[in-house]
Image 1 (cartoon, one colour):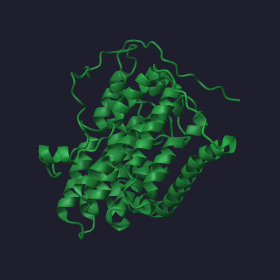
Image 2 (cartoon, rainbow, N blue to C red):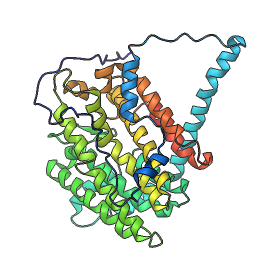
Image 3 (cartoon, rainbow, N blue to C red):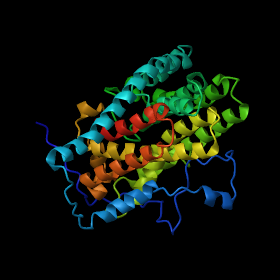
Amino acid sequence: SRAVRHCAPQRRRRRRPLFLEKSKGRRPHKACASPLAPKRSKTKRKMQAVCLSTPAAIVRSSVRGRARSKSVVAPRRGGVPSVRAAAEAPAAAVEASELDFAAYIAEKNAAIEQALSDSVPEMYPERLHESMRYSLLAGGKRIRPCLCIAACELMGGTTDVAMPTACALEMIHTMSLIHDDLPSMDNDDFRRGKPTNHKVYGEEMAILAGDALLSHAFEYIGRETPKSVPAERTLRVIVDVGKCVGSEGLVGGQVVDIMSEGAEAGEVTVETLQYIHAHKTGALLEVSVTAGAILAGAKEEDVERLGKYAQLIGLAFQVVDDILDCTQTSEQLGKTAGKDEAVGKATYPSLVGLEESKKIADKLIADAKDLLKDYDQEKAAPLIGLADYIKNRQN
């Protein structure tokens, strides 16, 4: 049987100082706050404030909680059968939720795959478009397109309204994977169980294919979004997507991630790691949800609430990714396992331990699902199911 690698905190070799200094009481910049979003007065913000834990607060409270003694819980009346039934009920609910999500994915994926294929046709120069299509159509769960469509439908929109943006988000995600796998970045040979783009087409073509997908994504939103959608909504989505990909989003998180590799123990904090994950992974997940809601004409308070949900599942996604990297094999993951530890990259297991990382992920998922309790549960089922899927995924 395969031995599980232990992700105990290690002292890391010094590579270069981090440019990200410890903040002096300031919160990290919100990655996807749109300049086109309606502004609210301070008084109104206070009235609408919701008492929610931020992802960073969840992590800090969980880390502090390790030092506290465990509370003693008195046994409930009803004996062992009642306790067992109570324990099995949530598990059954989670399993049903994941089945709902799987059914939703199966229903939407055929349309998404066809739309993705149509979005990047085979044309001259053939080699470039072949490279773009190779990675864009390489499979995967299409989480970001499904998030966009599910949020749009939750807020009263349709699949047709959201599909162009859903495809654009997958183009951007694919670009990030192509570039992330390059020798100058993560230097990976496999992605989704297949050779990475640069292994098939060469580094030059892989870089250019990623560049082409990124620029095509914005063109596609502007050109293909149905004219029935008010122009200001489409424009806001383009602005939000642009911001979440750039220096205040995905690219910013990637930079801090690179600069954190090989840092000495204590130099990379949990807050730094939370910044990396919130921007590198969470920003694109967040805009996938908020863009769908905006296209459907959702109220600003709903856009904010769904954005908060996406932030939480985005961070949970990466915490689980860190856990899987040190507990699964390359065959199970479809990519090289153990890469984070090999290059001295900070992860949740390396900073707080494997068990504490699992507790953090559980807390993030629970809080994300709690944000959806006031919506129609049938329409919210795909988003609830996605949260449960992220928690229990194995690759």
